[in-house]
Image (cartoon, rainbow, N blue to C red; front, side, top):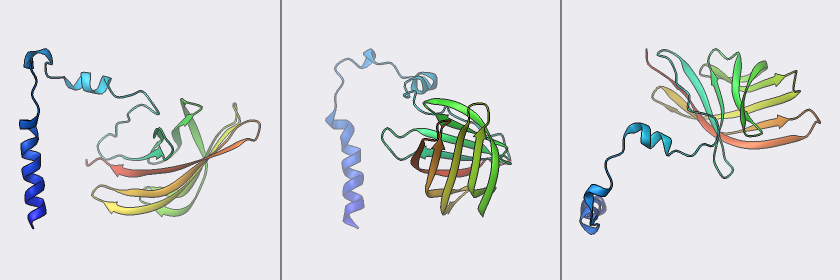
Length: 160
């Protein structure tokens, strides 16, 4: 019981430990300035329309990047391939039902001969979605080389 009180007291005292000699030198930042300061790595931010659901996956290797986005019903996915976003059509789906998605999905582009296989292990159910505890994205290029990226993420739905 004493620990939460001590933590709250410590947090409340932190502002008293810092002092800005020139408070007018750093004006408050706008939302657009804050967004502009986010590093450009991985896929761009994605928005869901009201009533829509999306699957968001991040790679587990450093640096963590947003690597896959799919909106239900899944017909294609936006995938980070060689550092660039590529829209790949779905070619197969199977496994277990995972909300509006399934646990095994395949995407491919016949022109570039790029193939992506997504395998997911669903986790804890959340309000409006569910965690992806673990998974893998297998990338196969035109020469047949394969790269496996461990992923984690979430499926989420916008109310509406």
